[in-house]
Structure formats: C-alpha cells, structure tokens
Length: 309
Image (cartoon, rainbow, N blue to C red; front, side):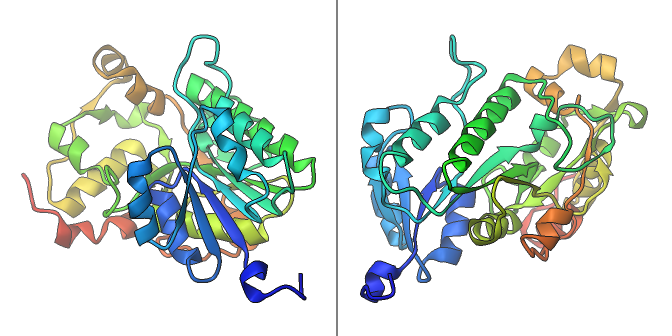
C-alpha cells in the first residue's frame, strides 16, 4: 500500500442507511476519507453528491443489486434498520444477511460498525445494564435486531473487526421528529410516577461521533451502549422538556388506563425500564459527550421553539 499513489491509499468508508445519523457521520469523514453511500433511490444521488458522498445504487431487499459493494470499502457503517414485519420473516433481518453475503464475495473491509438498539435487553426493571448483560428482546423489532447482531458477529469471525452499537432514543433539535414537541402538543399522557419507567437517550451528533470512532477504535466483536449520562424516568423527561419549551406538561395516567388508550408501539416503550452503563463508550471509544444529558441537549429549544401554553 505504501508504494501506491495517495488517491489509492485513502480509506473508503461505505455508509449503509445514510439517513440523518449517517449524514452527520459523513460530515466528519468527507475530506479525510472517500465516503460512499448506498441508496435505493436514484433521486437521492444528487443530494448525496452535494454532501461530498459517492452514491452507490442498490437495495438491501434485492441481493442481486448489491454486487458492486464487494471489495469497495475498507470500512463499513451499517445503520439500515431490519425490514418491517413480514410473513415468515418477523424474527430475522434479511437486509443484514444480504449485505454480509455481498461483502464476503471479494476482499473484506477492515472494520464494520452496526447500529443496533438497546431494546435487545428487554425490560430490566430499572436495573443498571452493561454490555455483558444477556439479550432478552420482547418485541418483534428487537428480536430482528438480535438476529442482525448475530449476522454481524458471524462476519467478525471472518476477520472483520465488527462493532455493535446499542442505541437508545435518538434526539436533536435539528433532526426530523427529534424532539418531544409534537407529542407534547398532542397532550399524549405519561405514566404515574409509581408506574413509570427509566428512559435513555443520545444526541444525534454524539451518536455520529461514536459511529466514526468505532470504525477505527472499536475492538473486535465488541458491544457498546451509546447512551448519555441522563437518569430520568419517562414522565419526568417529558415534564422537563415541556418546561424548557414553555409548553404544558403532559397528563399522568395509571398503567391500566394507558393500556386501554395508547397505541401498542408507544406502550412497548412504556413497558421497558433500564439504565444504561456507558463506560466503554467513554473509555474505549474515547468519546467525550458534547451533550452529557438530554436536558443540556434540549436547552437550544428554548430559543428555537415558539411557546405554546
């Protein structure tokens, strides 16, 4: 490699699932590396090029379109979610499997980072949770994530330095649906304190920094909780967010009442309680959080969000 021209020695990072977080990570990489982004939409190509990315057309649901991925990248950031519920596929992530099969056809990347979810831990009754805790997913989407993690670990046995980031709720004032404002406007209730659960968050910018750090610093087959230092129950979080934005606090209801009135998706989040340890994030990935707590991250809303009482 040392004898090759510089343009060939440059690292090539492939981003799979180049949405909000992927684009934030790309901003840190463009100029330092060549950044490629998989997209299934030709219409997105000009937008990606404008950000300094090289678009690669392909669809994770169509393996035959992924042949071009093989041998391209020296490092891969995989942020694409599993497919939604499908008959016969509710427990597996065919997208991650299709990606890994495509990558293995030629020279493998040095490292791959996969964005999973802290939902794989299931309900921990408010306990502190480290990365060594066994997974116990309770929902189909979390079960699919566990399957994806197994696929990524399988790739790691082929010599790729694979890292798994377990991610809680992502927020940012400049992220689509990245604040609780819409929910507060609707007056969606939260649980009474005696029924409430701990909730965990990470600012999208801190998450993007963790993604990039893991590409270079992640240890082989290592799992990281990518969460901030916040220790708040869900209702208290919405109360404080409402105060910051000058909005009305949400009503409190008993769990029995919530089960009769709230959507199943929302109820699933209100049924799992855990507090995440993030020592590996700080010590191994050397991430110094820019937003150590969600309240610090939401402070900018005080000046950017109109008051609504």
